[in-house]
Image (cartoon, rainbow, N blue to C red; front, side, top):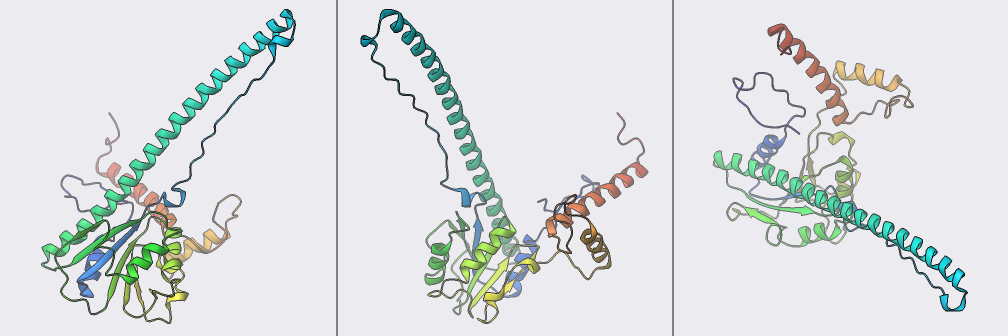
Length: 305
């Protein structure tokens, strides 16, 4: 996602692929006068954490050479040598495979750190924006390692003073009262992660995180695709963002055409359902096309050496 503000003089042709919502989250925090909140984000590799496949190949050779004639022994020796060569090759392959697995693990760790860094940058941006506006807020933040198994994280969040006191970090000074309210921002990497986290947050009876006093802001642009049936009757407040407006004539026309396309040729087509990320991809291509036309109109030689 590309976010931020850049000077038009230096970047006259900059295109943003996805609308930023971090400032909007900060505005909601200020509007609802939250003085303390927990910022929860997921590790998008979480559901695969701890899963590793290591193949160990063992070749056992047993032969009673002393019981066969010399010619047979030589044949056996040749076979042994061939097997040893095969074993050496297998060992080399296994070694290469382990090296590749190590590299993959390193890449996963880098991705985790990058995701954590991106999230912390978003948290820092929210905190800095509110600080500039002289709005005092305490922000606790934590990464959920496995979105499919987050019951313990939510249980701890629901039964304690929140995640900030005991895990990843904290920003700001002491809260100025809380009034029994629990304010939570969920920043997940995928729509599937949001569904998994919401399902678990509403499914802990001893905590009751879908009842009055709990307030959620979801960092999603696809609010209408999520299931909030478990949150309807408890008095909980859930807020988020919806970028795709089906009532817009242009969107409606596109969805009609999308629904008429054969899904065998166009994966995901055949229905009026379209995720925001897919719609943004269409928007991005159209915007790039218009931007290129504009660039060529302003400077016909722009792409010539």
